Image (cartoon, rainbow, N blue to C red):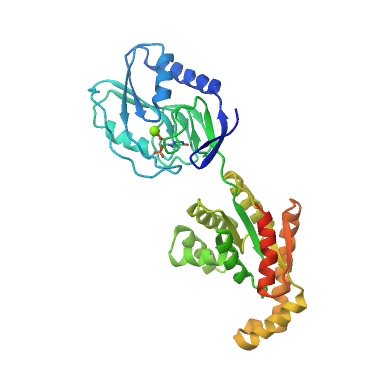
Length: 371
Ligand code: IMP
Ligand code: MG
C-alpha cells in the first residue's frame, strides 16, 4: 500500500483491513453480550456508516434489525458545526432498544443531534456505537457506549468515510498527509528593518505574520478570555505566563489552518517557549522550518538608530546607552534560541547590512530553500 490522492489532497495508509475487521468483531461481540436476550434495532447513520454497518451486522451473532437514516454534517475536512435534519426513518421505535451505528465521532455535533432526535421517540433504550472516535476534538458531554477505536485528530478516509465524496470505497483507512508549511521564526535587532521585511515576505510567500505584540493587543482589545487573563497578570505588573501566550498563538494558528505557513515574530523568546511551539506544531504534523535572524554589527545599529532618532524624535532612539542596552538584551535572547535551532540545523543568519532591497534578496534566498 502506498499513498493515494483524492481531489487536491494526499493520504497515507493508516489502519489496515485486518485491524478494522478485528475492531468491528470486538464491537459486535460486546454489543451482543449486552443485547442477546432481545432484538435490537441498529440504525446506521448514512452515508459514512454504510460499510461499517454492513460488516457489523454480519458479525453480530443474534437476531437484530437494521435500518438507515441520513444526517450529514461534513463539507470538507473541517467539521461544519451545523447538522441537517434526519431523513429516512419509517420504523416505529417505541419500546425498542436502539443502537446507533456511527462511522466516526469527531466534534460530537452530529451525536448531539442524534440524542435530540431520538429522545422523543419513546425508545426503550438508546445506545451509541462508533467505529472511530477522536477524543481530542470531542466537545460534548454526552455518553458514547461502544467505541471501536480511539484515534488522534487526523482526517481519515476509507471504509465508508469520504473526503468531499471520494474515498468511501477504499477497504482500509488512510489519513491525510498535512501539506508542509513554511514556518519561520524571524529575528532582527531593533533598527534592522525586520517589520518592513516581514511585510514583504508575508506577501511574497503567502504566509501569515504572527507578531506577538499584535496578538496581545488584539486579544486585550477584544476582551477574549485569553486577553482578559493576560491583562490580569499585566495589571499586577507580572509577566504573562508562557501557557497564556502560547495559547493565544495557537488560537491564531488555528484561525489560519489553510495558510502556507507562518512568520513568528516576537515569539518564541525562551527555550521553553521554543519547545512548546515545537510540540504544538508537531501535533499538527508541522515543524519550524528555520530561525532566520538578521545579523547587524552593534556599532552600525547604534549609528542607524541615532540617525533615526534625530528625525523620529523617539526618545529611546536618541540615547546611545539605551540603544546599546536594547541591543544587548536582544543579543542575549537570540543567543539562547540560536543555540536551540542551530542544534537542529535550523539557524540561518542573514547579513543585515545593506539596502532594504539587498537584505530582502538575501532573506528570500533563505526562504526559498526552507520548507
Ligand atoms: P461531528 O459532528 O463533528 O462529530 O462529525 C461527525 C461526522 O463528520 C461523521 O459522521 C463523518 O461524516 C464526518 N467526519 C468526522 N471526522 C471525519 C474524518 O476524519 N474523515 C471523514 N469524515 C469525518
Ligand atoms: Mg457520518
